[in-house]
Every structure is written in C-alpha cells, then in structure tokens.
Image (cartoon, rainbow, N blue to C red; front, side, top):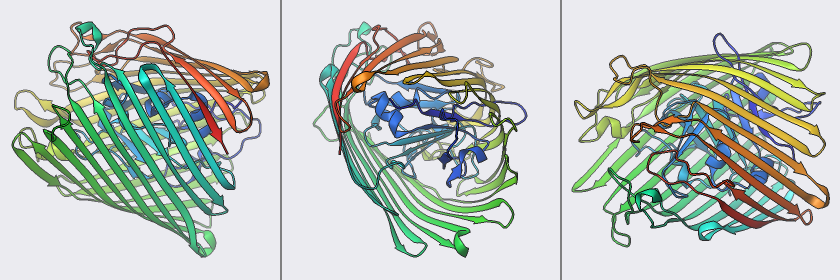
Length: 625
C-alpha cells in the first residue's frame, strides 16, 4: 500500500509557527516545490509553509472534487452552496475567499469578473489533477495580488510518470445517479513529454436549498473538463512548453433571497486557460530564463428559465506576460528577478445594462537565496506593482530554514507581505463601485518546528502563525458602495503527524486552530469571529494494506461551530463526518474501489440554508496501461 503523502512544511520567524509532515523515510530524497519562489526548489531550502498532495494520495483518496482533497490540509476551510458543482469557496488561514491565489498549470484562474476575484472551486474536478501544492502565509514577492492567505497550485502533470506511453482511465458511479469517467494519455521520452485527458461527470445531485425548508427539487450538474500539455526541446538549452485547460459545466441551482426555497435557475460556466512558454539555459546552465504568455477566459451565463437565452452574465479575462530569470552565483546563492504585465478585463450584461471595464498592472521583483551553511538557507526579496487605477504598492518578504545537527529536527521562519488589488467589479460597478479603492495589505509571520521520530517512520510538526490584514474592502451599508474599512486578524496553530507504526499501516493526523477576528475600528462586530470559519478543524486518516492487493481506509473530519450572521441563531453547528473506502488491486493494471461518504448520515451545514450530502456510496474501476 502507498504511504500517506499529504506532506506539509513550514517556517519559523519571530511570532508564529507552521507545521509539516514530510515523507516517512530515513534517507530523505529531495522534494521539489515551486510555490515558494515560482521556480523549482528543494523544499528544505524554503522557510515557507508548503503542503504537497501527490498523485498517489489523489488516487488513494478517491475524491471527485478538489475541495475534498484540500480538506486534508491544515487551516483550510470550505463553504459550499449545496449540490455537487454549486458555488464553493475556500478560505486559507481564515483569509477572505478572494485573498487566495489559485494556479492551474501555471495560469492564474482567479476570476476577474467575480466580486472579489475569487475562484469557484465547484467547477474543479480531481480527474485531471495529478499534484497539488498549497503554500500557507502571505507571499506576494513572486506572485503579486491575491497571495494573502496563500497559494494553491494545481497541475495536470505527474512528475513521476514513467518513460514511454502511459494510459490511465477510470469509471465510477453511485448515489444520485452520479456517473464519472476519466481518460488520460501520456508520453515521456527524456525531456520530451506530452499529456492529454478528458473528464466527464453527470449527477442528479441533491436540492441545493435544504430540504427542511420544503425544497425537494434535485439540482444536477454536467461537467466536461479537458487538458493538453507538451514540453519539447527545440534546441540546445532551449525548450517549448504549451498547456491548455478547458471546463464546460451546466448547473441547476437554487437562488433565494430570504427563506431558502427551490428555484428553476440554471447556470453555465465555461473556462479556457492557455500557456505558451520558453525556457532557456546559458552560462553553462547557471542562468535559467523563463518567458511565458498566459490567457484566461471565463464565461458565466445565468438563466432564470432553463432553455431560454441568458438573463444576465459575466465575462472575465486576463492576458499576462511573465518573465523570470534565475542566476546561480559563484557563492552558494541564487539570484532571481522577474517581471509581469497583467491586463484583466470584465463585462457584465443583463437587466438593461452592459458594462465593460479593464485595467493594467506592471510588476517587478527580485529575490536572493543564500546557503551560507550546509543546513541553513536564507531567502529575501522585494516586489513593486504599479496598477493603472490606484498606483503602486511595494511588498517585502524573508524566510529561513535551518536543519539541526541531530539530522531529525528542522526550524523554519518566514515573514511575508501580501496584497490584493481591488477587483474590477469593486472599482467600476455602476451601482456599488468605488474607483478610489486602495489595495488590501497583509503582514504574515510563521515559526515552525519539524521533528522525525521512530527511526524515521514518523514525523511530527507544530506551528503557530499570525496575519494582520489592513484596508480590507467591505460593502458600506450606509453609502451602498465598497470602501476600505476592513481590518482583520488571524492567529492559529497547526499540528500534523504522519506515522507508519507497522508495515502497511499508515496514520495521518492534521489539526488546526484558526482564530479570525474582525478588527475594524468602526465595525459593530469588532473582535468577533469572521463568518463561516470554524475555529477548530481536525482530519484523521487510517489506512491498512492487506494480502491479495486489498487495502482499506477511513477518514474522520471534525469541525467546530462557526459564525453565520444569516442564520437565525447567528451560528452553524459543528459536525463529524466519517468516510470509509476500500480498494482491491486485481493486478498491476486493474483496481476495483469503493467508498462510503458521511457514513453516520450526519446533517450539517457549511453555509446557512444550503444542503449537504447525507450518506452516499460510490464504486468504480481504475485501469493503468
């Protein structure tokens, strides 16, 4: 049976701690990450807090949606608006949903047409995704806007894919008429790599409005997702990188104002992302250059009556030029510089209105990575972004990673600043926009300790973190406009442990305490918890491999009460969910699998008035050739 590999790493600096659970092995192999500096780097050289969900974990978890996997990472809170495929948001370390940057195959997919540039995770299926990195903590230096809570990086490329031709397919069915199929093909011959795949999902779903309000109509979804990618050398030291990703999803949903109720509303979401890049090496491989062009196009149409023309809709797009250079200096150090130009655009149409807006932002940054000692790495940098509307903003960051002489303990520290540019909606909407908005700003501190035990069969990590966000953009009910009134604070603890007490038996535990507070001086909710963010979250997984290729597993998820001002009581109750799974490898190529979600059939909510799934069973087959 594969090892549990939700891997977490963290920094330490003057105020906070973050945690990690690296792979359980006595002889450590380098683990390459990209989210710390936006360039490949050994994770033990970074003080940032980074978690990795690899392809083996993705297969083992049998998850359908990305949020099912992200729930296993500390300090992530998920809110869903009902049935599978409905609007689903992710909060990282208690940040607002638009304060987390999301990358998909290197393309920023934060939606320029949404209220706060947030990503709707309801449209993201696991089928194409083979690796996820989650960097926690503010780090605007390599990324710029949105990286306040952190960065979620999704990729369709499996870095451990074998040489030659590889085929992967799966089919699954289960509760509520759910049917899903996945097909992927890949080719690897040295530096030449090509991948393509398609995922189809259809389900009758559940009522998005909770049935206790009398809602009975099921809200289904049909989602088609496809990707293609090729990396090819075209000359000595020069390679071409092309990537494309597309989603076409049609969703039935319940739109209600006041009491939850059924409605006939339907939406269609279409997304296309494209990337074209060149990588060049010179100076004997000491200088690495990367030039990329990316494009994002989102289309959201809403129908009050299915089958009729859209009653209203949104269009959001972004063109980006991105350059990064990395120079290995004579001393044990790397110097990185970068430049980006973003050109987001936005359109809303409907109800007699048709408005279009756009902006431009030019950014430059520099980072220095020093390795003065064999077990010590230091990183520092600065960035400046110039926006066509609000002007410029400068951010700083620094982190450290120190391995102690015992070879089992690592200390980390990180200080990072982040910002979020006001969305085009917040700036220019004809009813509530405010062209005078300033960017949201944050300061984040982490301190962490990682220690292996049981002769390398276990890893324990403890973390504290703190983040203060200023000039947060809120809606002012007095003026009915967006204003920079908000100030929030998030503090917390992250604990993670992974251990293999016996061969074939794996235990993984992740706990986080995330205390988020409204610190806006004029707010009537001053020092109260922020909405829909449970303070306590726990995920515990136990997996066992048996004879004849049989493996079983269980995951328990706990969440404490949360504030929700829309609920009559002002709160949402906590919950405990148990998932059971089984897999039987008939051969190296064929595997049967099944799982039972919410085995205790618990009633719970992540947003008031919206339903969640009860007990549900699914089963299927996987094929690898």
